[in-house]
Image (tube, rainbow, N blue to C red; front, side, top):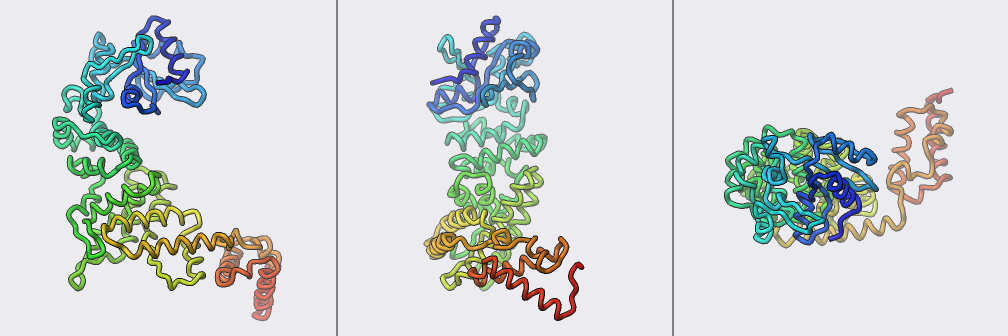
Length: 442
């Protein structure tokens, strides 16, 4: 498999200086699987200070002990000095022995064209198995984040977890409390971006790891719904996540869209109802995402979709109602919201007539977009300066209120959205204000 020039340069320079240097980690695993590596790592016997001298001409930074990240032509490569418990154990064998899983504890000697695999990683790849290197308890104590990473690798590769490793994950779940929430968040995000996130999430649930950082999700386990749903709340959420496109916002919105259902679940007339669950789910999603240190921007997007995911469309909606829907959702959120709702409806596990309505709504939205109607005050044929000029107003909240009033009129009748038409409306407002004795700024 083709290796980037920067990797060859790094390996050549290290070996020319008399040091051992090998490709290690995920890149070797991906090459064995016939997949194109995305992350490149080099292990070497060169000490950290020597690394900085050898690569003084390359842009680099160091965020981890004994590791520098080299950058060239937009490509990154982590170069790490062999790690080991004792000074004399800092060899390739010692380094690989302290990596997390056997499938990531292989090295490749490019110049000798040989795979170095002391812990059976190649065999575990063939068996499609995630297995800790040596004693799983020791590996997880070295870095408890590996508990979640095992589930992430199983989800990404569609592998199973070795029974001994799985048992250690369950036994040591509480160790995850020692890990910074940001690191756990990043592993969760990677699970959600895998081909089938439900696989990783179910492993986390089975091993009690989910209980340590996302216990709210477990509240839906075993909770039946109603005649519109064939699955429990937990399984419905899993089915929804697997069905939406792999974008961070959509996968997170799918994870949280029904998360508060167990808290509002009530039996009314012998049927379970979930009144207001979308609002409660949005609030709970915000609380969880803040706890896991997600950014404000993605929290706002995800909670917005969770709040609005119950699109109760019916064919009796007027074109005006559809335009109001677009404005309420926001043009930039309409596509993701419709995608979330479609996955949500399919994940009911029942024949669902609402899907037909959703497809009809999509067609109507597409038709409305063809006529390019104004959907925000920015789309109006006049702006705030025109409002201030005609109504003799200073800049302030009143200008925004008037633009909003004009927007309401244009929603009712899009043909009003011409400069002359809106100026006429503004002049009418001015005449009414004068008749009522309301002064302008002057």
